[in-house]
Image 1: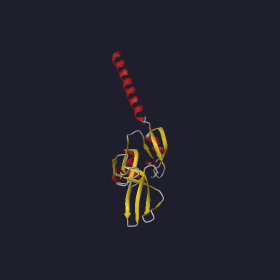
Image 2 (image 1 turned 180 degrees about the vertical axis):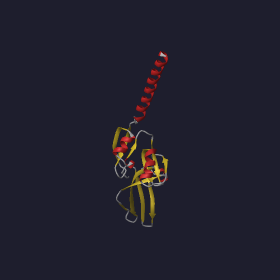
Image 3 (image 1 turned 90 degrees about the vertical axis):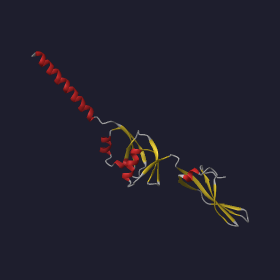
Image 4 (image 1 turned 30 degrees about the vertical axis):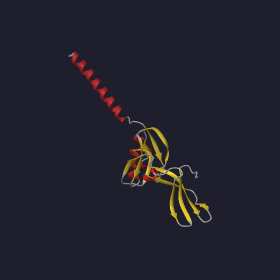
Length: 173
């Protein structure tokens, strides 16, 4: 009888310690770093050591933050919006928050900023005028054909030549 009672006490203590350990483990949410965004989706900074529950409590709208730590890639959303260096979990959230429908992973050089200006040459007097410099975001196949100093003829007549010049650093030859 004494052995049965001792065995029963040990068994109850063991089961209690296991069940208590499980309860403590379940209630402990993992902590992450999060990127906080403004209402336009612009990154404002990181908050670390917060669980998902804590983030939901402090920022109920999930459109204003996303979890960091996952691999980051570049994306093309709805065939026109290019987003650089964010994890896929952010892109999925972006679709919901901004009413978008599709996304695909693209090379991070898919879109680039290029400086352009128009060079107008009046042939009879050999005079040249330039338009103001513009910065353009160009993507896809267009980027693959560009290089520093590239010129594309827009129009040529008997007395004028108009070309579009490209620069990746703002200086033109």
